[in-house]
Length: 600
Image (cartoon, rainbow, N blue to C red; front, side, top):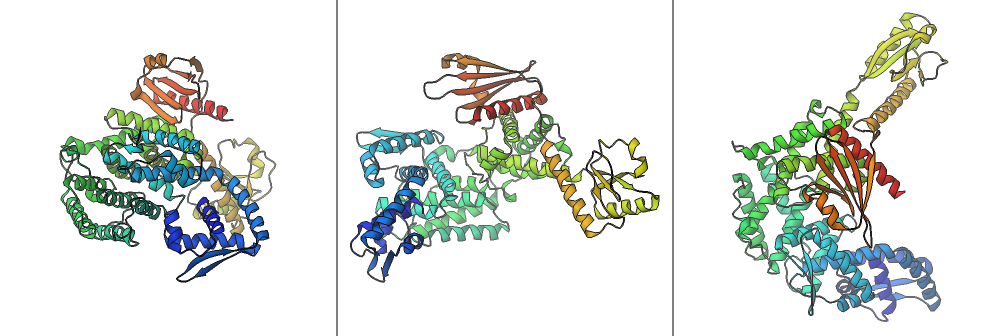
């Protein structure tokens, strides 16, 4: 069971009388449907003990158990609480973070949060310290006064933070958007307002987006669909609370190229939301919605003109492919379709970067785990191109999406490379030729480079051969497959499996560089002023908490590891001076080796 279900069970134990479902809905800020599901989950644990939950229509719910059964249940709960402790802390912090973002007009207190979550004041203080660090990522602050604590910052940054936390938490808690609305409902006591809190609110916005797709005759793919849906919901909630975008800079954006079709769609969305919720949406808000629509990768987003800015996505994409080709030693420029597909992603990505619209990549953690070297190389390439075109650096989710295009290109390269095959028979050219012909007809990626008899095998160099197929057993050190001259179904299956193994081996080495003889000088620094004299912030790339890469092009090649000694935790900055991208790639490989040893 999750923390909420454990807490619900505790409340049921403490209650001596029937309580209506709404009583628990209000307590946990969730819907009746969620409470009902939680009760079903709880019953899976308590029913084997003989404990039951009585549900009376119109009366409420009540737990029935004996003293002995209660002792058994307490033992189970104690074990559950211990195992769920870390998850509980994360969930509590996420909920506090969300509540603070929802109620930016109100102060809360440490004591209030301590009472609400039934934890010590020290725990809440630690929670707020963690939240304060996270707020810095959105240029927001946690303001503390004698009245209490609240989040302060620009309305746009508050909304970006809300979008981010809801989407991030949505993977863990499927009902999180509903929970977001319910928290707002509970905190602001809008019991009788038939607005965003009604059950059909999300459905209304989903229908709006469905109408938009029909109007444009396109499908809005993930993560753009969820991004836009979440923004519209949050925008409406914030306006209902009196929080509007009022920065006139949003309207006076000289670089904003207007597409009439998208403008009409924006106006249509705005009018329908205004009518549904009886609100007035300002022009500034409308511009922000338009920017979201032009950042979701639809073909209508890009009106063609002769402006220099229209060449930016094309040049950005071409430079990115060129740098990664040099870093990996793979000619990505020759991969059919890569440029066109990548540019379709880059166009809206530049808009998202320009308008500070964040998307989340659900596979980011997998990319970081499975392709760490490649991810860092891609991030460095993106940094170089963004810096060249004076674009704000894209976030890690965008980097992971870009990497996925190059991994897909790798797959195409691997599949297009021929499997160099040699066919061996005991004797008779006709038998060998029959097998060779059948192999080429059955497997389009096989290239027959030799057809020989087994007695001539000793003089043949097999080092560069991918596949050896023979009709007889051989006495050689290389792996080979035995097949009949007529190539039956079993033979085909075995050969197909072997080819896939060859592909897997090629995937592992494609785009991978070795560190080679790349020395790393280690310098330990105690005073931060020393490092600030050596590096400029604009060339600093974050690899995670307290780990950075600093890159500088020049005539020399070197890698220096600066270890900044701090009271709590050391900070690592790997400085790379490079004269070419090939060395830069080797240096990255060396750094990942160093980091891996540190983790071990």
